[in-house]
Image (cartoon, rainbow, N blue to C red; front, top):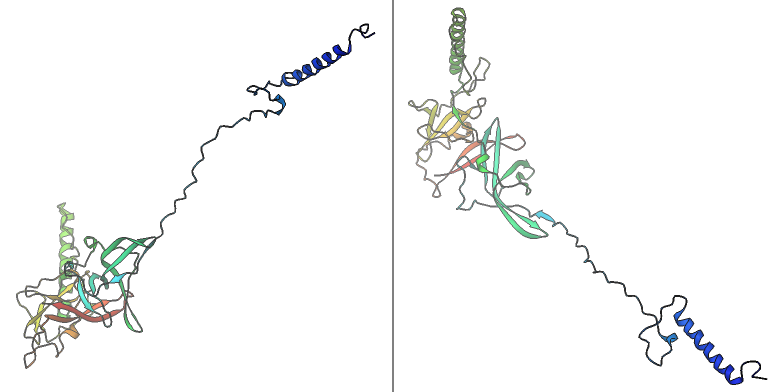
Amino acid sequence: MGERNGLGKGNKKRLLVLIMIGASLFVTTGCGIKKASNVPKGVPASVIKPIEVIAEAKPTEPPAVVVRDAVKSRSPMKIFKDVPRDVQIPAYYSLVDLDNVPHAVYAYNLGNNETVFRVYGEVQELEDGNVVNTLTGFFTAKITIQNDGYHVETDKEEYPVVLEEETPATLKTCVVPTKQNITNYVNKAKADKAAYEKALAKAQKNGSELPKEPEWDGLPILTKDTPSVKIPSELRAVRKVANLYYYESKYRENEYRRYATPDGTTSGYYISNSKGELKDGSLEVDIKSDVTKERRRQNKAVTKPSDGIYRVPVKIYLSDGQLQVVDQIIIR
């Protein structure tokens, strides 16, 4: 009966095993699934994990470096009490004595009632608090008067002055505007003008070269309205040099003063030598304070200062335009 059906019990078992093996092969190779390779013998393919795909690692970029600008600043300015000996002081600088000011202050005349002040100082340039540079030299100073006296103000952000760029006033000798000198000047000006107009008319008539018109020579123009001044009786004129005067000091030495102008408008007396030579940028001498009885020759000789320091009263204009009379210190 079994044979009639075509398969016996033994054959059925073999057929069932074949079917199971075929199904297993179908699972591992069919439906586009890649057959696992490198499968160890004796290990069912179903327990082998699929090979993982490892992505190519990209190099890690270094973190961005933020560059911070250095914090720049300057230290407070240090003003020297005295200029170091190895520093050359410009000839047109005058050392002035300001009450209650503990350091050296220099000044020079710029003309037009303006005085320029200088101090010798030092300021340090800093980066993040560290000193990277030191600036030393003469600095611009502003001088004013406050409740406690003279006050010196400097700007630490400024640089030392360039001496080659300074422009002290050039002094030109001029006549003292006394009443007589004013009269003489006005009369001469009238005569010069009349002579020019006559020569001009003549040249225009005959077609000749025109005369040169009188030019201002950089000296004060005197008119009949110019205020006159009186030459102090204590001053003696030096005959060989125009507008040069002197008086004998209490030290039995001649003090020379010459009348000059720093700007062609204002004029006054300035320190000079016996030849009448003037120094550009000089401060005007306050002649009223200069020829006082205490400063002139005494009946009894006065001993000269051992340090060679002389004091001459001069006029300065503070930074706010205020006029002051202070001592200029001269070392002879």
